[in-house]
Length: 349
Image (cartoon, rainbow, N blue to C red; front, side, top):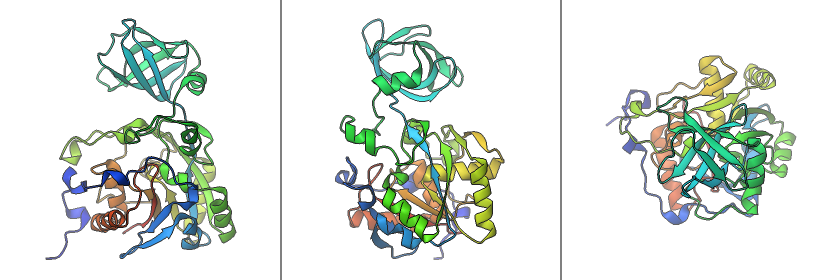
């Protein structure tokens, strides 16, 4: 029976499920960034490689596009006036010492409550965000938020990493080129790059450019509806600098390829291509059948079952192709998720 093209098939949440042995969830990074494994998944059967081999797989004139966001110590602890413990995960910093955050607490306090935060500062609850029905909360800190996070915050490790944050996490859950503070989660595909790989890419004639997308904790939010059209995608802020716009145009003009480092870079580039807006908030939801306008290749980690990121990579490389790669990765004991191994994918059409 001939296969139905992805664009003509109606996908449901269950299509993106798979069984992952828990021991394959990486709890710590590889000893060296570029010593991670790299699954070259451009064709089937795939090729098992080491990440530092990446430069040889790209061509002179290709353009690597990185997300230069910097993870902030966005997890903060405190208590209500009643003594009840709570946790804040700052999603973004607004003006006037205000922040938008997730709140983990047994019972949500009423608007106007002043929370006593660990470190000696306070956070006044102003309401929900972006409106009264929003899942996030708007708070006003008594001190400058970035300073409070740096002094008293914790690295916002993903929920599947089972240990508390350490000095190793402060260093390794961050890319070597992070410059724009604002992320509550790392752009994990870029964690594999070190100075040696970057130098080898430059020597090969592969060019570099940056975008910014401040990754939100919503990236870990589960999809709860079997019908994908009913899923409400989280919002993230992005920017495509003028220099990057020019580099992409020049790359396309010379016949080079756009290589996105991570799904966050894909979301940024395709949001810009779709909307024409070089900065702003995006809720783009990329599922099979999506027509890519800019990205030719993708470097990415292995993602959670039934996640929006599984849908994105399936949209790029083809659903059956990606599922075959995941079966191979599990059989070959690749390490999964944020501290796990990487994969190289090519756009299907």
